[in-house]
Structure formats: structure tokens, C-alpha cells
Image (tube, rainbow, N blue to C red; front, side, top):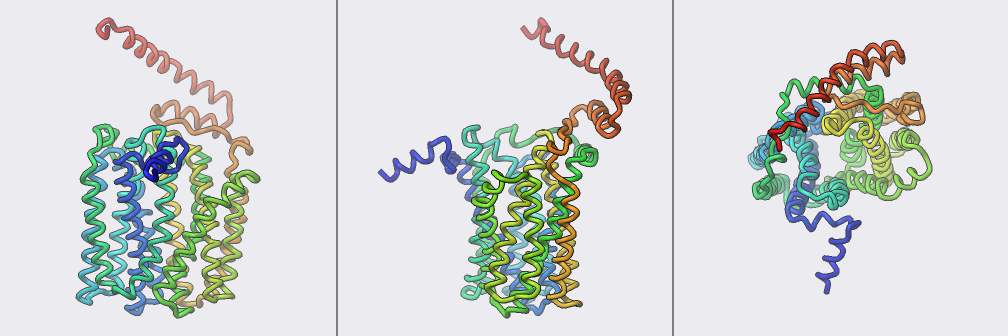
Length: 471
């Protein structure tokens, strides 16, 4: 009876778990959850190794080492995912992660690790994430049905929260019992298991290889599309502002826990778990509540307003309970801003290059965290932790003011044009001349120039449909 009840839940069209009836999706989803959880745990382990090696300023560089690969490789990885066999990309990325996790484990067993070698291994693991993340999201629509897709998207968001909740807590509390060398070795075996799960997946030909467009051509097309769109530029700028404001959380939490609170790896894992728990609460409860009452731009401003308060509180009151509470509130703000900016980005671009525009969003977000982590770590070393957090609160307040000047309520502001798909460059050029100049004369000139091309194109399509050879 229990099995029949479970089957009814899974088969219900509105169920969150509907996509789990698809065995291929279930295997890949479990593999991604396992992989993300191991990576979250390994970040805590690597931070402990740095602390054990006597690092102080380098603790804040952990956030830089994990963010910089996404900054450098997110867009190339998105383009590669559109032009290369996706299964090959995932397997290569997972094999890369197995290799560097094994190398980190070898260094831990032989006690030959240095601060630089730990940061280098973390950076290398981040490269694997940068190349695999775009492919994970790209393959989901091709392996589930239209009915299962909403459930698959929801489960895809849940896997991030599950990994963020379980991974740091698991890494922090198991580390003292098993030790870093054994735990890293187990992580390498888990990555290898994920590789074996992916090996069983056989994508169809359309999933295996996408567009025939060249790498440089695709890169140039994406850059042109982004820099010509006012909406995209505003969204990317707002994303960068919030990333700089939230950077103190991943950058300075290890410094606060280890140097100020004299805490353990378990307490650091608990702090990062609080960030993930706050993100989950923000996504499930706070975000739906706010969406019924205020605009998307209002939600992002609420998130920007939360960060100066959080940082100022942590600057002057650094007890364990306050740090954990501030971490959870920062997690709520992170979800509010991230969700609304991401949604605005999806609405501002056409479907053909949405994946590459997502890469731009990832890049600007990681750029803010990577740059902020370097500045904050240097500030904590020279000016002290309290002053650094206080200055970060002032900078976040300035970011709130700048964000207020650049609204993402494009329809309310009268900026409702959606940038056209760049499949036909002349039409795109004509559109942007019109939108930037607001001049009817320019528009007539361009549209008159494009009219013969449209007529020839329509004529060719009509002749192709009416070709007797086709019948």
C-alpha cells in the first residue's frame, strides 16, 4: 500500500517529485546531489587544512579560489556545452575532479601540502565545476518530458540547497573523527562513483551535439548581444553590486570562526549550513511573500538593504550565536537578490542564447565575490576584522544607493523591448539603432534597407515548400 501511495504522488502532474519517475533523470539528479554535497564538504576540509597550516589572510582566499574558475571559464564552458558532446564534457570534468581530489588526498597523507598547493587544488576543482555546471542544466530539458520539466527544475534548485545544508555540516562534524586525509580519499571515491553513474547515460544525437557554430563566432555573438542590450547591462551591473556586498560572507566567515571565535571545523560547517538554511527559507517562504506585495526591483533593494545591517552587526558583535544568525539572514538576502536578478535575465534574452547569458550572470557574480574576497582578506590583515567589516557595511550601503538608480522594473520604466535573437544580424542592428537613437528617420532607413532581404527570404521559403520534388 505504501508503494502504491508513493506511485500516486510521483504520478501527480503537479507533484514536486514527478520527474523522479524518469529513471535517467533520477540517476543524474542523485549524481549531481552527491557531487555537490561532496564539493561543499571538501571546501570546509580545505579551509581547515589552510588553518592547520597556519594561514590567516589565505583563509579569505578560499572564496577567491572557488569563485575565480567560474569567472574565467563559465562563458567558454557554456559555449563548449552547446558545441561539443555533453556527455564527454561531464565525464571529462568529473575525471578532472577525481584527479585533483586524489592529488589533494596524496598530499594530506604524505604531509607535503602547503598553503599554495591547497589553494591550487581548490582552484583546479573549481575549473571542473565551471565546465560541468552549464552542461548539467542544459541536459535536463532533453531527458525529461514537458510534463516532468517543472518538477525537474524545482528538484534542480533543491539539489543546491541539499548540498549546501548537508555538505558543510558533514564535512565539519566528520572531519575531527576521520581526519582530513581519509575524508578527502573518500571524496575521491565518491567522484569516481559519479563518473560511473554518468557512464550509464546514453544521450540521443541531438543532446550529444548541438550547434555547429564556431567557438570564437559564438563568443563574439554573445558579447555583441550583451553589450547592445540596456536591460542586460543593468542586470549584470546590479548582479556585480550585490556580489560585492555579499562577498564578506564566504570570504570572512572562516576568519571569524577560526581567529575570532577560536572555533572548530564543526562550527565553521555549521556557519555555512546556516547560510544555506537561510537561502532555503528565503526561497520557500520569504520570496513568495514579497512577490505578492512588491516589484522585482523592490525585492532586490530589500536584499541590498539587509547586507549593511548584517555586516555592521558582525563588525561590532561577534559572538557565536550572532554570527550564526547573521549568516542565516545573509543567506535569505542572497536568495532574494539572486532569484530576482536571474529571473530578470531570463526575461531579457531570447531562448537561443539564454545559456550564454546565464554564463555572463555567473561570471559577474563570481567576479564580485573573487575581487571582494581579495580586498577583504587584505583589509582584515592590515586594518583588523572589525574595521574591515565596518567598511564593507558602508560599501554595501553605497551599493544600495547605486542599485536604486538602476531599476530592473523595465516594463514599468517604459523599457519593455526584448532584445531580438541574433540569428539575423541585420535585424538586430536595425533594432538597436532604433532603440538607442529613438529616431524615426533612422528606423525607416534601416527597415527599408532590410525589406528586400525579407522578401527574398520569404520567396525562398515559399519556393522550397512548393517544390514538386518534395511531393
